[in-house]
Image (cartoon, rainbow, N blue to C red; front, top):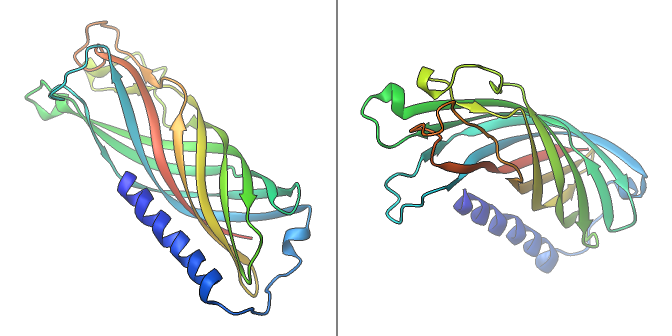
Length: 235
C-alpha cells in the first residue's frame, strides 16, 4: 500500500511539473468554472483496505501476528463542492465502497480456523478541505484532507456467533481522518480530477469473542482500518 501511494505521488507530481515547466500558455478550458459558489459531480475509483493491529503481548519475531491479505475494491459516489475563496474549497463526497480483506490467524492447523474473509460494503461520507495552487494553463494541483464517517452495511456486529463458529465480527460505524493530493485537469467539456488519499480509522473496530482468551481475538488490543483511495472525479 505504501509503495502504491509513493509511485502514484511521483506520477501525479511529475505530470504537474511537466505542465508547469515545459508548457507554453494555452487557451484556458472552462475558465469560469472555479468561480461558481457550488459545483457538483461524481467519482469512480479503486480502494485498497488494510487493518492495523495492536497487540496486548507483542512478539518481536512477529510469529503470532495476524496476516492481512488486501484486495482491490471498487468505489462510486457523488461530489458536492463549495467555494470558500480562490484557493480553498469545502467538499462533501458521499460514496459506496466495496472492499475485501482476508485475515490469516497463526497457531491453527485447519484452514477453517486460519482464514477469515472480511467482505465490507461501506457508505462512506467524508467532509474535506481542498487547498489548491494557482491555476496554470489547464492544470491545478491541490492537497486535500479532513474527517469522515462510514456505515458498514456488511457488519455482523449483532451476530451472537463469534470466531468459534467461524464468524469474525466488526463494528458497524467508524470515524476516520483522511489526507491526500491530486490534480485538476480542465478539459473542453468538463473538469477531470485524479486524486489519491490515505484513510486512517480513529477507533477500535473489533467485536471480540465471548471467550476473553480466544485464540482469535484474545491478544488484540485494537484493530483499526487504514486504506488508500484512488478516485477519478468528473465535474
